[in-house]
Amino acid sequence: YLPITAERFGAGQSMRVAVAPGEVSIVTVVPYDVSRIIVQAPYTAKAGTSVDFDVEVKTRDELPGPHVFHLTLTPERGEPIAWYSRTVAGERGSARVTLPLALNDAPGVYTVTATDVLTGLQGETQFSVVP
Image (cartoon, rainbow, N blue to C red):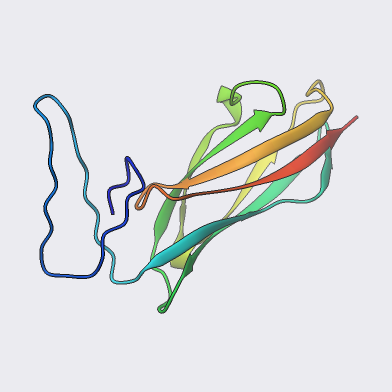
């Protein structure tokens, strides 16, 4: 995988990666094929309470190993909220993340995006914050 671009390479003994002068590339190798990232959240959460998110790596064949996920929380109209960003480690390709919501979080739909740091693949889900 090229996690910066979420590009997937096939199985094989070697690969070619072109890196222009001044650019950086990261290559990761895992012994299984990651098919997608699943993020689950409750349908609604009350402002001022904590909300749990489950993140899971789905593979085509084998059980996944440890993965690291970067999570962001984005309101319906806006940019990701910095203080809700988290980077978490998960054993066997899964992690549970608890975020305490502020009492003054605006009601509305929020998107949780989880990026698998190893592959660059993303998954997301939405939930509503209610007063």
